[in-house]
Every structure is written in structure tokens, then in C-alpha cells.
Image (tube, rainbow, N blue to C red; front, top):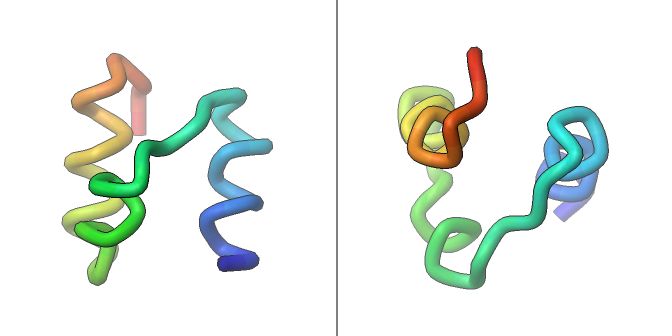
Length: 40
């Protein structure tokens, strides 16, 4: 949960429950961030 909070703060965004549950790898985290229009 600390990682999720840090990502939300660093990218000034909020994740849905579904996004949080899906973020089980770096690749998936990148996919979620990109889906929000963030450059990673």
C-alpha cells in the first residue's frame, strides 16, 4: 500500500480499486499509469 500511495503522490493521481488490484508487476503499473495519460 505504501507503493500505491507513493505513486499517487508522485504522479498526482488516484487509482481505482480495480487498478490497485491489477498492479502486481512493474509492467502492469506502467500500463495503468499510461492508461491515465501519464508519461512513464
